[in-house]
Length: 550
Image 1 (cartoon, rainbow, N blue to C red):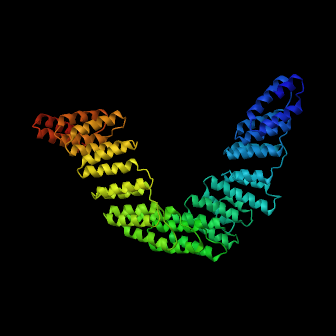
Image 2 (tube, rainbow, N blue to C red):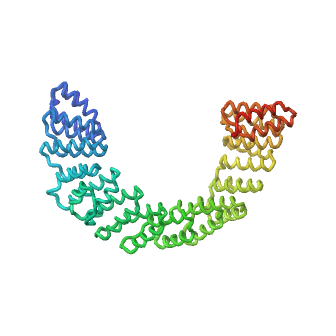
Image 3 (cartoon, helix red, strand yellow):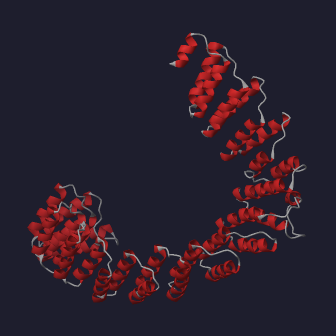
C-alpha cells in the first residue's frame, strides 16, 4: 500500500527502489524483489544499480537458487556493472555447494579476466570441491606466490578435502605421505602439489583420516595417526575416539585397547564415548569377563554404560542358551553400582523361558519387582507366555490381575496369550470368556485372536461356534490371512465337515492364497473318513497338479 501511494505521487526513484529490494531480499522474499525489478524496468525505466543487484544475488544464493543468481550476474555484465569480489565469492560458494564445479571454475576465470585477484578463501573453496589434480595444480600455481605459511596450509588442506570428497582418498593419503617422506613416488601432477613444502598440520591429517575411516581403510588411517605424533602434530580426543569407534565396529579389539592405553599415557582423558565403543565390541563378542572389567574402570572414572551395549550382551547370551550367565552378569553390574534397565531383565527372563526354566524366570521376575523395578506390559507378557506354555494358566491369570493392580493396560497380545493358553489346555469356555473380557475392555481382537480361538473351538468339536466367529471376524473387517483359512479348513476337517471346509478352501484359492500339503491331506482324509472317495480322489488330483509345493 505504501509503495502504491509513493508510486502514485511519483516519488519512486532509484533510492526508494533500492531500499525496497534490499528489504525484500533480507526477508527472504527474493521472488517479490525480482518481480519489482521487472516492473520498475518496464514502467519506470529505472536501471538497477550495483548495490541492488548484489543484494539480490546474495538473496538467491541464500535460498539455494544459484541459477537465478547467475541470471542477475549476467544482467550485471550486460548493464556494464563490474561485479566485485563479494559477488564472485558468494556465487562460487553456491555453485561449489551444488557440486557445479565447471560453472564455478568458469566464474573464477571471469574474475581473473576482470582484473580481480581471487582471495585465499575463494581458491580454498574451489580446491575443496575439485577432484582433478590438473585443475588443482592450475589453481595453486595462480595463487601460491604471495601466500604466507598459514594460507598455504589452508590451500593444501583444501586440496586434500577435494580429493577425499571426490572419492580419491588413496591419492589424498599418498599426497599427505609425500610431504612427510622424501623419495615417495607420486604422480607428476601431485609432484607439483607436494612442492608446497609446508609441514602438514593437524587439520590435514584429520581430513584424510576421516576419509580413510569412512572408506574402511583403517590400516592407512592408523599409519597417519602414528605419523601425526612423529611430525609434532597434536592428536585430539576426537581423533582417538573416531579411530576407536571404527576399530571397534571392525572387531579389532586389541588395537582399540592399544589406543585407549596410548590415550591414557597422554594428557587426554578417555571419554564416555571412548569406553562405550570398546564395551560394545566386548559385548558383541559375549566377553562377560572383559565387559565387567571395563565396567569397573568406567565406574571409577564416572562413566555410564550405554543401555544398548549391556542389553546386547544379555540378548546374545540368552540366544545361545546362557540365561544363567546373563543373570549373573546383570547381578555383577548391580554390585559395581550400575542399574540395568527392564529391557535387559526382560531379555534374561525370556532367555530362561527359552530353555524351559520357568521357575528361574519367575524368581528373577519377583526379585526385580522387590528391588523397586516397575515391569512394563511387555515384561508381564513374557511371564504370561511362559506360564501358558507350561499350562499354568491360573497363575498367568494372577499375573494379569497384577497388571491391573499396577495401573497398566494389558495389550491385545496379553489377551491372545491367555486365549491361546486356555485353548491348548482344552478349556474353550475360559478362552471365550477372556475373548469377551477383551471386547469389554474395548480392545479390538486381531486376526491372531480370531485364528487362535477358531482353532481351539474346532479342536473341541465346536465347529458351529468357530464358523460364527469367522463370520463375526469378516463382518468386523478384520483381514483374514492364509494362516486363518488353513486353521479353519483343518479344524472343519477334524470335525468331519469336509464339504464346508471345501467351500473355504475354494475361497482361499480365489484370494490367491496357496494351501499347503497339510491342508490337502486333511481334506483327503476327511472325505475318505466320510466314505466320499470320489471327492478324496478329486482333491488328490488337484494336489498332484499343483506340484511339489502343495
